[in-house]
Structure formats: C-alpha cells, structure tokens
Length: 143
Image 1 (cartoon, rainbow, N blue to C red):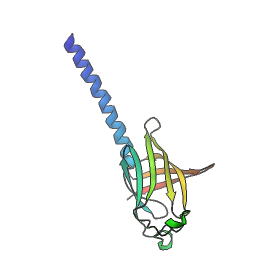
Image 2: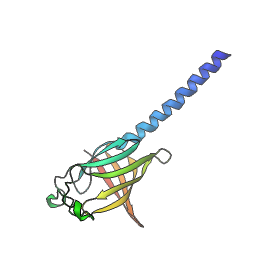
Image 3: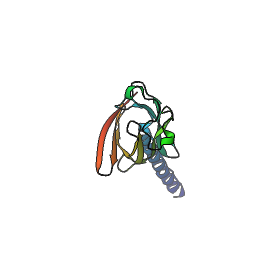
Image 4: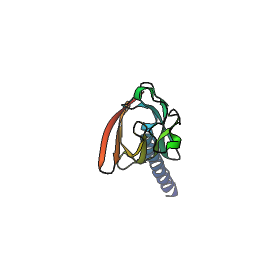
C-alpha cells in the first residue's frame, strides 16, 4: 500500500515539474535577435523572469541616426543607441500565452509605449505597442 502511494506521489510530482518546464520553454520563444520594421536590430534576453531588449545594430535606421537625438531628456540626446535597453519588464502570461506589462522606447520619436507580444513563432512575433487609446501591431522578424 505504501509503495503504491509513493509511486503515485512520484508520478504526480513528475507531471507537475514537467508542466513548469513547458511553461518556461514557451516563455523563452522571444529570446533572440529580431529586426524591427525601421531596421533597428534588437536582442531580447531574460533577467529575473522578465524580458528585456537592447539595440544591437542600427544599419539603415533613420538616415544613419546613432544617437538618442529625440530623447525627451535633453541631457541624454548625445547617448549612443547601440546597447540601449529599449524593451523592459515584459512578463510571460502562461494563461494567455502572451508577454505583457512591458514597455518599449521608440528612439525615432523619443517616446515610451506599453508593450505586449501577442504571439511568437519560430521566425516572427507580433508586438503590440500602445499609448492611451492608440495601439499598433507590428510583425518583427527573427535574424
């Protein structure tokens, strides 16, 4: 009897632990290098269970812009864009299978927007940026 209960507990724990691994693997689909429609190349990474993105290449961006010239903080307008964290605090929602509650900084306009990623496939994802009542969905392609 004890052996049957012990075996049942081990099997139950196995299924519980394997479901956590599946959730983690799903959440990591956005990790990697992506190109945005305006030719900004970013790298998304995970830190403390949240996702962040930094600019890694600007070839072809905004007529050669390399500095954060539109930053609302005038003292930061000479900052380099390469290496700048532009995606912050994205969290994976396993129920909705989306990444939510993040922000993205748009250097071409100098504004910060709310960010949600609706889905991620092997080579593309759909990002939705919003500010107040306005929103726009954009497809990003994997590099």
